[in-house]
Length: 447
Image (cartoon, rainbow, N blue to C red; front, side, top):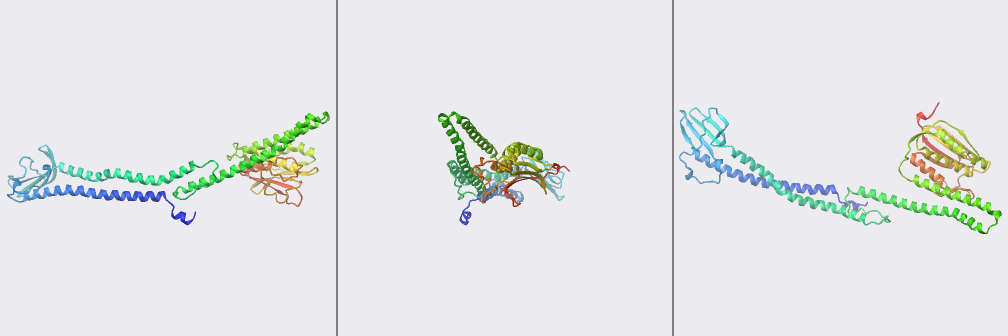
């Protein structure tokens, strides 16, 4: 990703934060302005009425008809009552409301004339002044303040929907374009998804998709190559069978048995190749082995050697175990058996008559090492990196084989997390050396 792409990169988080910050700033400003307007009007009307009432009650001789009126609710008026030292009422602003004189100075609440009143009583010993106001005034003020605070929010909510909807559409529009582009890609499309114009929070996802596309492309290429190689390998035994079948019609009875034996050999070769292909296809599954049993390596390795003793004797190859220690491993016994048998089969197959194949199982530090050393021709120079490739055969042309044994062994090793190596012998003698390393488990060795 170059500097230009970074400079033009869109961030969902930054865009959302900026949009919401602007929206909240507008909402806050609108709330302040509207609440201020509501509070100012309510306070002005109320305080104007209070000023007029103060003037009426403080100015002796003033009447309501002689003072300019103000926009004031009747329930906002004060009830002011004054008594002299003898208890005679000398002033009453609301004669129609009988609020009894309170004996206790200060604030109190009481019902009168069908309303609840807040009363304040004060006295200097010569006069007693009692001022009362309806409680509904306070409730109206509280309601007005609540409405003034809530109204801006209620007004701004629809506006917020519009702003948030616009911001989300702008953000998600790029994701819709990405989804549309992915939906329109063909099954054979192998180009990576371009990163231009994609929000940075989505870029890790797109990079993961691009990585998946590359792996899928490699898998498809590998599959095509696998099918091509399999068809090529199967062509030879099938062609040989066809030749023998064609020769049965024109051949003499003396060659019948010979042709039948040749056909049987071709069928075995084709069947072995098909079995190897099926096994390799199953092992290509990236899931770990289904079986996770405790496997005793020594008995399993001995069984694998025993399975090839007769084959080795017919060929004149000395096959045996030269070193053995007890070891255990957790994995699939079936797959481990296939691994060991393929390595032993490979060694016996490529070792000439009179040669030897030595199998050993020993501990090396914190590892368990299985080695299969043969006295065959070894690995030709330049073929070391390709011996695990499918259908690659470094042996002489007259040596029978499918070229899949080592590929299967390596795949089983990968599934179990163990190391499988095949190289030329390091003691200066001709031959190859297969080496399998397993983690050493303390309980797996006996004294």
